[in-house]
Length: 374
Image (cartoon, rainbow, N blue to C red; front, top):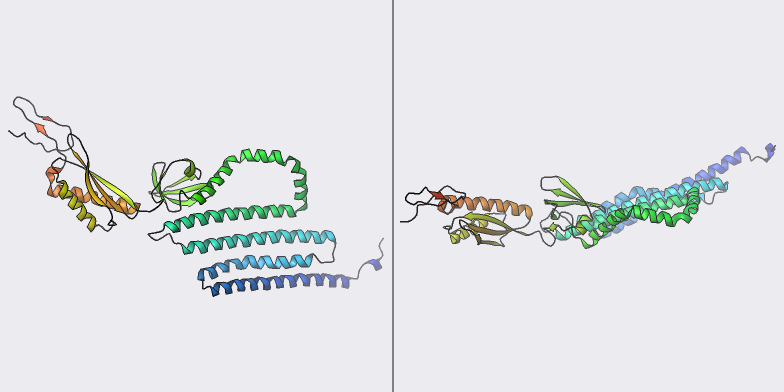
């Protein structure tokens, strides 16, 4: 049996515990002071450059900095405590895991702040937003890639911190090659998706807010991730496609180089239509229409058959929605002009009357008949 005289006095034990707690409290206080100093230095640099957005984003780093520096100072203190090795090792493991989590938190906040800084400088709610949409697409995809890498590295660091996990990893090291082959085959499609996402970020066949025609649907690119793309269709439905679709399948991108588009309106008229007069009327309609960008306007006879002429009115607009409204307005006004000024130029049915025969009419849309000249 151990003699009571061999046990440390209670006062000495309490004093040692108090000293240890005091050192830990001092480490936490120094860590908070260091975090505040780092934040103030960063804010001072942002203030010197007169970047208001940067100062606002630095505020989001306050919480992870207050978690990171106290843990870092406590690691230095706990490592030098004169305590049982198992107890010190346990506390060090806990603090190392906390440090990894705080560092990952700070990295994710920093990446998010960088994303916001980049996006606020390039607005996509303006007419000429081609460069802005390119930057938005790249920044969002790069942020997702970096965030995923940070999470994977943090998880790996936490697992390596724990001794049981390290022992299990050593045991499974011999079968790592076979396991890697199995996982590679199982995740082949997922890895291909991620690689396709990287290719979209670099080559940019599509960008955010691009106007595209996919699967016979007209819509805009609403979201691009590493694995899928969301297309907002004109009627507010969402079409979700794998990102590899835009690498492997053909599709139409109406805003790849510019948002400007050409549109057509087709009219089918009688051969008696005054083409020159209708061409002048088209120009007059476009000049009164605010949706026309003033660049392209024309009217041509593009086809003819035994009964009608095909007229094509060509016009331009700043983007696809504006062009749609322009085409509808031009079509309505051209038809109204023909109805009011040249009704005989609308498609008609002609019939030839001969003595002793019933009238024979061509089967074509229209109701007016003309008697043959005698």
